[in-house]
Image 1: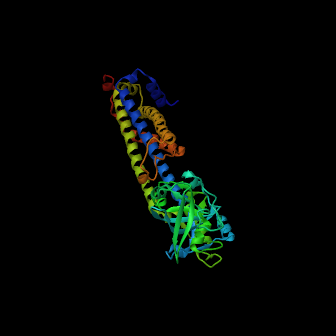
Image 2: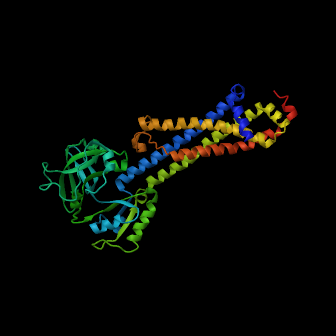
Image 3: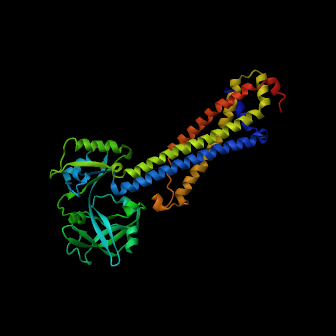
Length: 426
């Protein structure tokens, strides 16, 4: 039988004794552990929510990896690649690649009778994964995107316009809504005009996207760039596991760049990851990890400090009991272990209430969006939270272990207590 555990359980279970000086100390120690764990759970949930929400928004517009003309990356202008079926199948066959979709970028000006706005039109085809766009539509409905001419006839006619998806920011500036007609002007060798019907309005709260990007048919963007056939700006690749993004990109590099793989028109291909396309965004997200470690350290220190204070008070109040145990032959080690087990019971109760409080706050925020944010500053309109049960379990285990370890030193106080004097102690 584990005698220290037995004694600690009996002491902890005696309500009358806990109504003395030690009761407030136990309550404070329990509250310290509970508050510390709850804050850690909420902090980790907020950081995970922010990182994954912002990452998903960036990936929604830029995918995980882009395969494009190497000269376009070096800033030599809008240069196409020939993304035919053979090349697309090769990309799909690369380990880690989940989906391949074509895209084309072109620039234009949206104009109404009162105002105009420079935009980037992103043309996408029928194979494009529109799940991200669908989740962020605030008005209207996404059209069926095409890689061929969906509206044969005169494209300048308001009776036969192309489909376009614009942002809420653009709609507000130009005073437009879903269903309205808008003209886009393109400047190349000459000025041309196309008529568009606004099929839907999206809002991501990512300023760099909402201020710039419109979505239209792949055919339309290719036509503005003067590209025909299988030519396009490149292919966007979605990977199976974002954590293996760099490894998947290496597979692409090995398959194309190192082997000198060219498209059917002799263009050299290269790949660019989402980290390389938007480095500042991901650097900002990485900085959040530093904040997490600081908060975790402070909360563990809070739990440890309250437990040390509580344990010292309990030991001083139990001085007479310690003297009796020593008088009947109990060693210091047995008494120390008894109080450490007693501390484990207190920490356990604190962990229980900390989990209830922390997980409760996370679930409440996820269900109600109670805490709101300025989307222009934080990219989201409410605090995003993501509950990871494995991390919650690790936080519980780490808090328990660290709290017990910091109590080992104070527990040696029992060795300073003399049996004869302690039994007269009140």
